[in-house]
Length: 510
Image 1 (cartoon, helix red, strand yellow):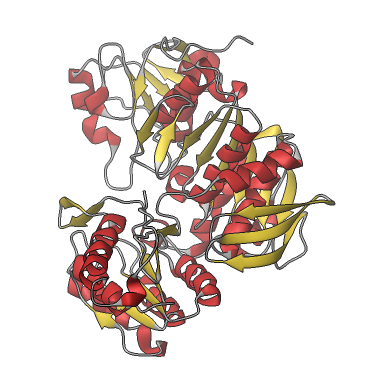
Image 2 (tube, rainbow, N blue to C red; image 1 turned 135 degrees about the vertical axis):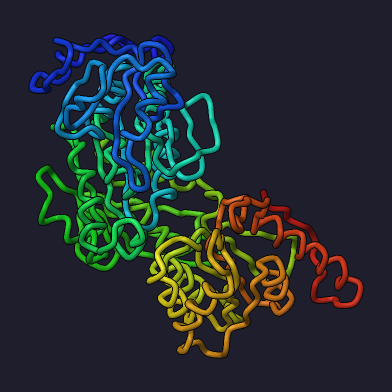
């Protein structure tokens, strides 16, 4: 089958694409362009009338028509609209399939690994890309940090792009000869069928713990959204499941295709024996379907060994040689904002991590606690206008640190002080009362000023993010920049007074 040219989308006939659909005011609809945003409509567009979480697409039909929409995609006929209509059972799913068709069904030309789960998605996709590149394959990436078609890279806007953008990016990958793609599939994206029309070769479920309950409301609804990733597996596709996590392990009962398990604690198809751990990385023996190989990952923490197992399982499904798997894991030195070291030569360690759920924070602190000779300090907060139930749970997780520093994350429209009070409810078990400062920059500074030689400071919650949202305004804020600036100031101020700060060389991060 020829590779599609993504720069020239096809024209799609909906009668052929959806044989069981009904049509109002026409016998068929030929679509040169489709969108679910009325503001993007142009002459001849198909407007997908989607009922969203906060708005109903029917409210924007008039705007879509004024901008040139020529037909509608609906779930029920709209008799008061004098426009051809294609009536389908699920508009979201049909819209995704149309977007894929318009770009030549690019997933048919790519080996695609998709990763879902509460934590670990970004690191695993970056590892998969690194392994495939080590094996000589071009690999695109779609995730929380960036979108890349194998040639062009852009900062991402959503963890998983909307259906039209997803088809465009995958189409570009196929058109420019990129052979594989690693993508994150968020619970929101799966619930909203953004990946409809995209077929995947490997579906990874990392873990399922509490997150996004402001959207999904219950754990079971959240779990069901994750399970939808299996709907997109190709006939020969494989589900890769973390059996160390009860939430993801429960998905094995619902798997309808071949599965491959991975784990450090429970018996699994892909496992590892950790041989040495330090703040410079981990050496482990990878056991992959009976074959073993020693691997060193520069990424810190046990949880990153688990992430490496997931990536290795996917690479094995793609037929990658064990040595290339090891080389790919070893060559990934850092993932932006994922246990990312910040160093200007100070005599203690500083890490910035995206951990913003209690499970992720607990894993990060456990990893660092084991490897830190001195005290472990943790700066963290919780986002506003998001799941409120996890705030005291974050406070509970912070008890693994010797000293917790509670501050703002992205308060958004909520009262930052109230968010902090909700977190502090869970801090009763902390070794000592947390230091509280609503100003994140001051809180980071305070924590770094307390650190002594041999200590470790974890700045958690925002990771790679470069903005802090207060009210409706996004202010530039990068935990790594703030930490580096404070460390340089402290280093320069104290080197002349304190000999223990002297170092032979200075490593500047990023």
